[in-house]
Image 1: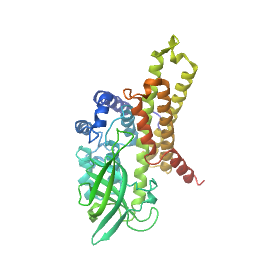
Image 2: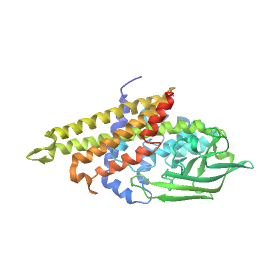
Image 3: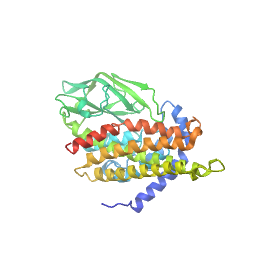
Length: 376
């Protein structure tokens, strides 16, 4: 295991940082928060041209064929600017297709993803609020050569703009047994998408209702009834992606707080000279570095398909969720009254920390998963 990034990866980081700081300052983020789509189609095209959307797509389908270590480099920088974008969900949609899809569906969808012509997302969480795939109850009943899907999926990221949904439904069995994955066109008859009000306006969420939706055999991703394993693998990689993004956001909050502590004066001296502020910043640094370490290891683990990849992903998500929430809260405290205002950017990071914390399960959920994986 190499504990450092390669020269190429550092170049990727610098180019991503430069572009994101230029194209996505907080003024742009605020405009996209008010926009119905919640993302910039123009910047989406730029990301495709730079190869970001096909970063981990196999070369045979128009991608770069890289891995999650390369991906987290870009995601950290996206987290620093609180980028509103369906990037993460499209990458995870493509991951499922690449891992389990037939040759036909791979050739149909992956080149479009890499070219920026497709937005994808995951639709598996249900009204129960249980992030465990084994809790899926939405049905996909056999109908001739195809299936009929009925049920509700909640908190579907960018569901209102996605071209395709990766839908997890139960075709039989209990737990992970009997779960089947489908790649469904969002405009298919019987699908209703309802936008939801969210605390984090940089991320748009939707309720997706399936009423007698017809799916053919060509829509199935992988084997019928065997989608549970693939879904878990995709979720693990989603946890890694969000952990990296949270590390980037936490690092930005720390940087903003330290910079502010150097210039904000109280009682005739910079507040950074007070021990209480120094302790806060030191603890924030510890949180950031802890989250970064486990996120990097998890990226290496899933990239190399090591046996404890699920354990590493759950650990990273738990650590990053706790760290980002604490750092964002302390950042507001360091900034004082100005940190609570709408005009200041600190609330953007605090809200992103809270929304991302609960995606794929919060820290408590993932620590419980870690315990189970250890056999405790």
